[in-house]
Each structure stands twice: as C-alpha cells, then as structure tokens.
Length: 151
Ligand code: DQA
Image 1 (cartoon, rainbow, N blue to C red):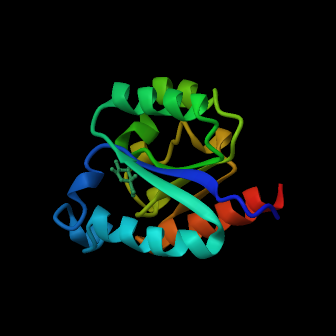
Image 2 (image 1 turned 60 degrees about the horizontal axis):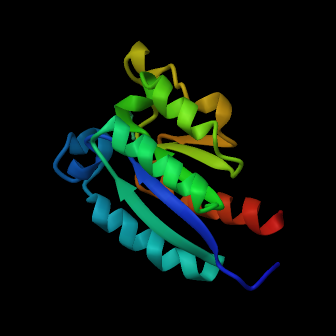
C-alpha cells in the first residue's frame, strides 16, 4: 500500500443539506455536517483524504463531477438524492469517471414508493448501500478504502 493519501469525494444531492430537519423519522436526526465530521475523523486512519460537496442543482453536480475527472479523484461516494431516480445527466457525467463509485442512501429505497425503486446510478456503481442511515456513509468510506488501497 502506498503511503500517499488517496483522494475521495463524498457528494450529496438535493435536500440533503436539510438533514436533521428533513423527515427525521426517515433520514435520522444527524445533520450533514455531523455526518461529514464523522467521515473526516475516519478518513485519516483509512489513508484517505476526503472532500465534501453538496448541491441542490443538477448542473452544479455535473460540473463538480467534471472537475473530479480532471483532478483524477480516486473515488466517489454519492448520495444523489432525488436525482438518483431521474437524472440521465448525472449518470452520463459519472460514466466519465474511471474511479470506483459507491451509491449511498440513508433510507432503504426499495421499501419506499415505487418511483424510488429505480436508480439510474446503481448499474454503474461498484456497489450500493441503502437503508443504514448515517452509518451507511461510514460503511461506504471503509469499502472505498478497501477497494482503492488494494488496487
Ligand atoms: C435518498 C432517497 C431518495 O429517494 C430521496 O429523494 C432523497 C434521499 C436517501 O438518502 O435515502 O433525497 O437518497
């Protein structure tokens, strides 16, 4: 394993900036800042350098993915929020990336309304984590470290 930290971006899509206030019975009581603080703590011991990005705007998320492509990011953990189910533009942008992608959802999207059962990201991601609340982000970070430190 090389001693250089590997860069990983944790991206969150629309309405995830409202975690803690938004439907806490579905999404939990932690804020996005709380979740990101926990990830920052875990990143060092996993030899990862983690950056965070959240936007409510599809085009801004696409632009950020382009920037990550240019900077050769080594992994993306993404909760695309509602864009999971709708955005061909997000899917096409992610297809640019040679690095592993992990899709994450706080809620179990398969236990919810049928329009949430379809993900436009699932088949291009290495894996999907859905239904473990905030802990899913920690699971995703560990899985990412394992994948990119092995390769
Ligand atoms: C979500 C699930 C999506 O269906 C929803 O639109 C979200 C959050 C989740 O984390 O469970 O915004 O991605």
